[in-house]
Length: 251
Image 1 (cartoon, rainbow, N blue to C red):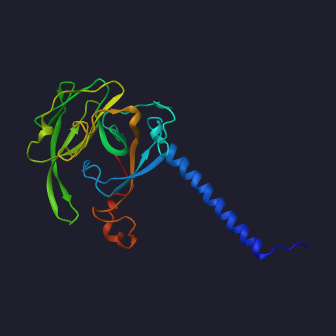
Image 2: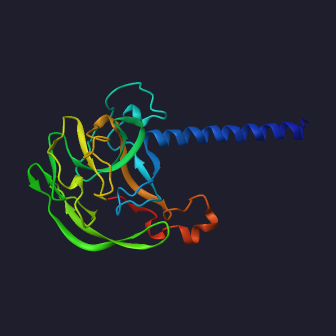
Image 3: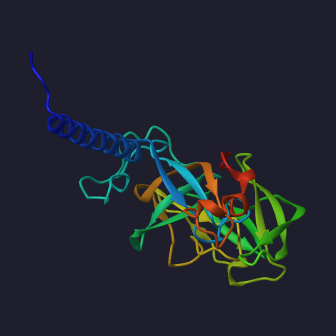
């Protein structure tokens, strides 16, 4: 009759735990690389659609895969693999900044390859036609100190029928009247919904975004805390979490 010592059982338990961690790490790596990657929103450029403190899942498979889909983004190949669909107007996407491909940005796709984009007196124009918008109720902006500020809000509808809301301060800025931007082939024109607080394709820091630089499409807000709060402080969740935003579809 064989007997297994307690020491061997302990070693076997440690080994099994390590194998479990390795398997879990591999599964998480596969999911992050090919399916969904979590991102958090650090700035207000996409208000009121996305808020500072939102945590969301971005689908990596929506537009196929580039080398930016891989962990650490090794430059193993160029272009995209498995790109069965391409970004459409109104999609909210995460992309690598063309001038600094270590930085992730999140914006809305406004211009497709071949489009002409211009802002005239704060009105978005696509291919020479003003994009219709209508004034809706003000957005109540809550900053870190929980003070409330009213900001003008508009419902904008793109030529493909996609509607969303934008924010607009009550005065014109440089980006309210621009040159005509002609989007090159295989590139996209991105804008933030918070039109007066968004560094996007209207500015040379961003410019046109190559298809290859797009990481994925924003799909779901899975967690959200008020600006200035820390997600890991679970003892504050009853007061710091925006419960109404949890599991919201990103549109």
